[in-house]
Image (cartoon, rainbow, N blue to C red):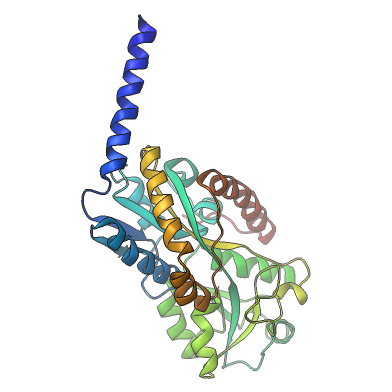
Length: 321
């Protein structure tokens, strides 16, 4: 008898979740980006949101909530109703970097449900025109000749752009001063103004500035040279063993119905595989679109978590309040 009631209860839950998935979304969907406007992740979020709104027939709005090494925006999503109407769009920092660098009151690996990896980005190291170095070997030599005088920007303490340079400093045996920002726009403004010497984010952020001669792209942070910029060496060519993997993706609060997660995954995947979107937006930005299932994305998260944990430890970084 108990089994009968249990199965009936399970059937009711499954039926309720299916009903929610069939009607989702029923109102405006918020996509929270835990970075300031103007960065590469913000651009991807807005491009996808525009197409989701057309597909769903509902408003899909992007809200920028920067700060706290992505914890402010992330916390807002975790605390929201787990029904799919509030989604998080963030870089890998939130899941695999911040937990190792920042004291937080939540666990993104448990409090969020991964939905889809939307884009794998190509991080590049740029050097300001206020210093003579143009390449990674020249930067290392200049830094060693001027210890502690160079500055580098990040999108906030504990973000991948922070850990990536700390990891580079350790491997290259140099010293540079960290200057954290709440996002990309202000960091670029200060870099062009000569107050920041080095910055590492998606290469798309630097492309137009490089063309206009306002900064220099020294190298790629990826394992291999970028297919669209084979002229650019990797940092690993000057610092053997250096390579980082950075991506953007969607997630939702824990306990969001699996059928809703599946629907969001399916609809976003269709947008990301649309040739018009790929050729008009993805490729010009230097992104690639990994075609991972929800299960594969979750597995990738766990592997990345261990990788960045090791990088943080090797860099000698301690958790910040």
